[in-house]
Image (cartoon, rainbow, N blue to C red; front, top):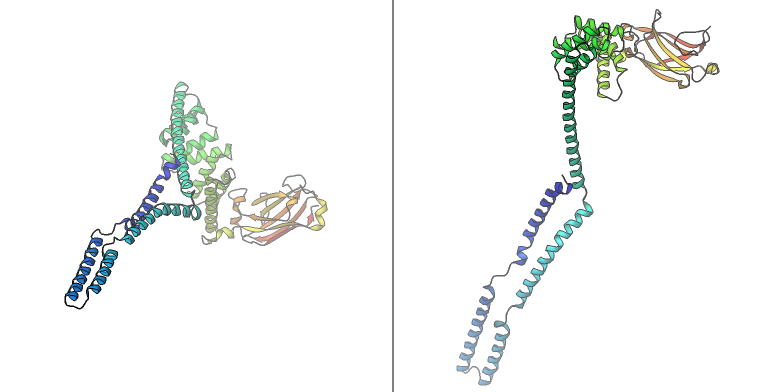
Length: 423
């Protein structure tokens, strides 16, 4: 729709308001005085002069006025009558003309002044810009609806093609997998489970088929992952520890069974695969934080609004000045959290470069190496910072190292200095 047509209602209203103002101001200026006013006053004046003339005649008959005086008085009376009583009313006529002239001037001036004030003090482009924005929004919504309609058509066409493919070649496990996903897009979960069952029979060692089959079975069973669905999920993770759907469902199953730390671990692994600044990433982040909080509350009885800080260690890693010349700026620095009793597998780990030191750090359960081996399960740990010249976390002679023992989980002021050389 054209923007001018869109703003037409605005200008129609403006013209109507202006017309109402003129209709209120102009009629009195164009109104003609009552026609009976002029003649009535003239007749009254003539009657007055007629009475005065009779009085002069009476005075003359009674001898009060001589003939000469009578003649002079009559001439004066006639002159006054001619000048006053018998003359028209040019003043009223002139006033009427001036009123009409003023009215015509106002007809031209009021619209011009109103438009000028709007152009100076208002925003002449606002209405058009607003209309253009509304038009653009309508156009965008129309395009979105058209795109969705096209997508629906494409899904339907793809679904028909896939159904034809599996009829032509029922031994093609990949086609059955694609068909199952197409059914899921249409919320046809029972059909999806049947299709995944055929795909699993043909490709039993394919992780995405296992996790997809498990999801369809769980949905059709009231979203219950217990039994065969979770068995399939675990088999899928053995074959592919990074299978997204298997990680998600593992977290859900753990959460449903109040294994909150385990749920946070699986969801955090999935979080690492999810692009940042997306709704999915934000949702997963909230899920991980909630699971960690609940897990710590279960382990230590901490109220639900406290465990986030209680299961975190914050601090800073520095390199001692006397060791600065014994490493290269590009050397890898590892920060490891270990149990107080030691152990080969760390509770959490971070990595950076030497040229980034000093650097602040935050360790929490999201950095756990194993879902059953997390910070929130311990009250104190040992922190190790190591400069590795070989690029891996394995300790070697000559590495620069700093160690802090008995660090309470929940501390936020840790200072770890790399100040020794491993023998």
